Image 1 (cartoon, rainbow, N blue to C red):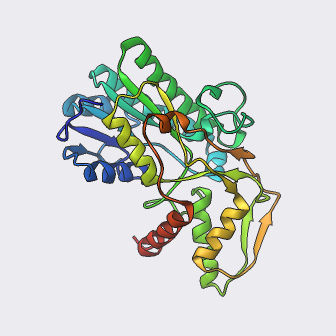
Image 2 (cartoon, one colour):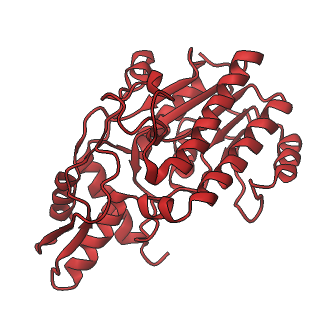
Length: 313
């Protein structure tokens, strides 16, 4: 068990994003009372001096890095430099400032895209750096791999409790539903909803529909982060996934049914599919005590209701 107290100061970087806000809710619900966050206007995490000054001033006991420049295949493919450089800047500034300020616990959040494109399935932590990455998001992946290795290096050299959690595809409240920069699940929710309102017009989706994907509700990830806050985990890297996957076509049909769209689905096979299969082996984290609880259809329903209630905000 960790020695963290309920009034220990915890800084959540990216606290207004989907992941950061879920972590904030989870920690508040568990009784943590001294959470701090800064908007990007208040603190530019790409600015090394600003981050160093902030960490030195606040002296948090824990830092949770849920801040990143994120997006789907289109956004990654069209913006390789900012996806590489801005993510490196954000995480490097936080990790280095935390280390120099003698913060002993740092939780780094990444993504399953750090693993090779054709790694054996399900993905295990030891497959990291064993082969080439998926080309459409390698810029983001390389940045996140650097963060994982930086945390591992600090843990190895200085014995600090720096741990990396790599979630599978996430969805839930505060997701990004912008069609140019969103991930597949929220993009589908919006497409099917708008098509339903447009007399159940046909919906065009990228690719063949055949790739397999695993999805985890962001509140389940938040419980994994709480678990890492509340315990000293024995290893530096843990996968965080639901444990089952489905085809993109099956996902589309599930979302179509939940939204209530009755039109056609047209698949544009000229568009890239991305990695053919991406199922994570999360047994390391499960074996020390974490379990996901939110089933996909239940999670999609709640995400759709959130979207309906927050479209104009």
